[in-house]
Each structure stands twice: as C-alpha cells, then as structure tokens.
Image (cartoon, rainbow, N blue to C red; front, side, top):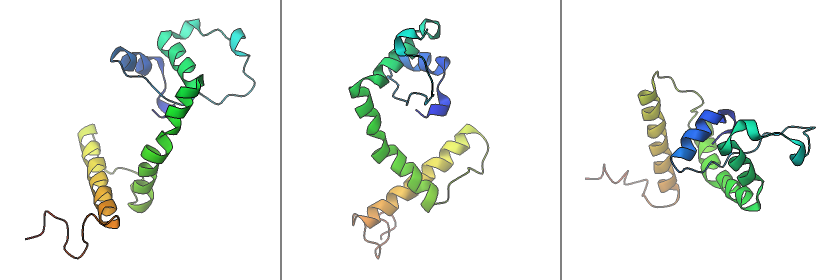
Length: 126
C-alpha cells in the first residue's frame, strides 16, 4: 500500500478481510519516544500495523516490494509513457492499466526469449 492511502478506514476494512497491511511508517522528525506517544485513539488496526512495520520481519517483507511491484510500475511509466490515464471511470482506468501490463509482459517475454520476435506473438502465428 502506498503511503498516501493510509487511513483508519482503509486499515480497518483490510484487517476485517484478513489482509495484513505492509506500508512504510510516516517519516517524521522530532517524534516523542515510543513509550511517550499516545496511540490508543487510533485503534487496533493502526497499532497492529505500526508494530508489524517496526519488527524486523515486517521490514523484510516490505523490502521485497521494491524489486517486484516498484520495478514493474517504473518500467511501465518510463518505457510506455503511462504517466496519466486519459480515460474516465474506474472500469476504463483498470482496462487501460491492464492493457499496459499485457504489453509490458509481452515485451518481457520477447526480451527473455520466450517469444521469437520474427514469428510474432503466439496468438498471431498461423
């Protein structure tokens, strides 16, 4: 989960579905020491997330995101120029994003030798 989408509603909804959130803790300077902070008002999902992200296992889990999700997002953004979706509505935005990912995956398949460029994609071969 991106840091910009952190809030109690989202955490509560995800936790109620059994989904554990791994999102970076906010980078704030000059915070009080952990024992002096009052976190009771934020609720159990937020407290559980903070404890999970401060544990070594949580940090390792979050670190796995960089070579997987972040790399793919950056490649689609830089190579395909998908910086902004030029459609309206969630369904159309999801369709545009999925088409970009399909194109990205085809390019990866060609680059890694899974598809022969001279023959074209497998579904266009006679």
